[in-house]
Image (cartoon, rainbow, N blue to C red; front, side):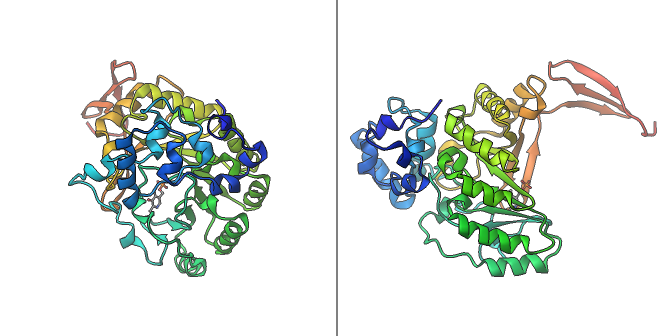
Length: 370
Ligand SMILES: *Cc1c(COP(=O)(O)O)cnc(C)c1O
């Protein structure tokens, strides 16, 4: 699939279409503009107006053009067009900040939860506001400048930290020079060996992956990129070539999909997504249970859904297409990987395992006293 600018933007020059700054300047942020592209009913227009007061929306023209305007259940539409359920479902289980990130911030913008790695939030902006975002609490906040010097001092004073994850918002929305200056500061700290960039621009704004950006990123010793493809419709010619450019610069790409009710909560969809990702050499890393974030309740699925999806994949398709299914526990206790139950019984030194075909097979262990 390829994006179709002509669908919504008939008169746009292709050079402009492929310019990420044009894309951001022309991002759709108002209901008036949105009605020009999607067939919105008047009650839906009123609902979007209500929702955007609390949770504003942004959709790049490119990402918008992937939506089928005839399909109200389009998987991309559901990820970016506000839904009244964001205000109405209000579960008792939801929080603005379930991972308690604010409590784990020793320095403004830096989250330190695990022993050897930290997250630094470098901007609040994105090319598309994902309705399932786990930091949607920050959408209304002014984008205050990150104090990278303070962060670098913290990294230096905590020599156990070896990896920095840049997140936000989307770090790749920063100007290339700005991002370079942040990376310079971070890599200047000798205990930092790896920087991971969490970015959805390969999916929502692939034209952001310019030669200049790739050259800059490739000049650093060890940068990884984690992105978020959630549905096979997002893998277009443009996103594929953006990924290839990043890979040519020596940067491995991993995918962190989020399990979303009504969008990708079916084994066939996740399997197809992950196989397509393997074909474009993007490694499925995590499949996330949707976090318990206020305003995302309509996307939640039971734990069993994720486990069933893995059960239908393990053994049935190659291991390189299979992500870990992970729950990021509320209260910030960390990520827990879950697997289908495969130990049926364990007595003395004998295990009974269930194979991917459902057969029960015994296995005798070593080194256990009878
Ligand atoms: C998810 C996360 C990480 C990275 O965890 P990995 O399992 O290494 O991918 C690091 N810090 C915070 C605060 C996180 O939420």
